[in-house]
Image (cartoon, rainbow, N blue to C red; front, side, top):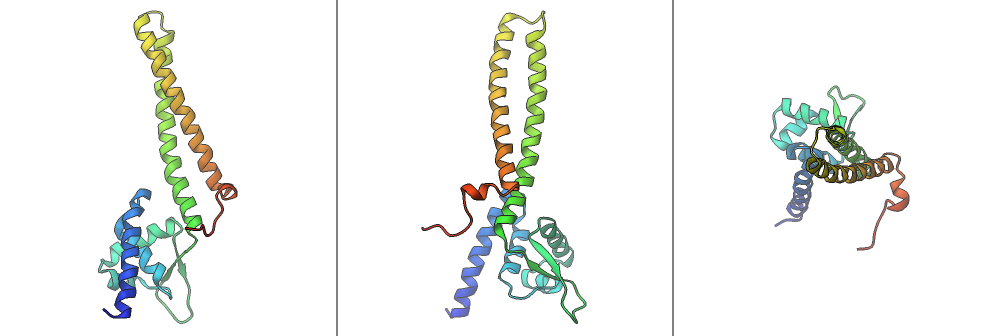
Length: 180
């Protein structure tokens, strides 16, 4: 195997691994591969060039680029004399993680808190209702305690998300190299 092939294999392995893991953030592997392609590209690329490299349709490529732009992982750049749109990756992974994590987790936490509050309201109605049996009230009190514990956890997650959004987390876990 030649040196160029070895370099390409190393890049492909990393891109594939990254693309598979991006589904944690709701990003499809094909969009992840596109980001990887742009990440390793030393020059901005056109949609046609990306399409040729990845073998995807131009429509799919355009949709993927738009998604990456919305996620602040790719930006459109201008180059004198080039009439087609050019794109390049944004390589601040700390910022990308912060944005992705915050948006995805905030949505999930918000949904869960909303469900918890509705459930707590229903349980409180049962507990306060004079016609509810004492046996059912006892069960409801146990459930209420569990739901309040869960609500406490989600408030903690919201504080974690806040610390990521404000970059305060980097005071506790600094950016940069760790010794392996």
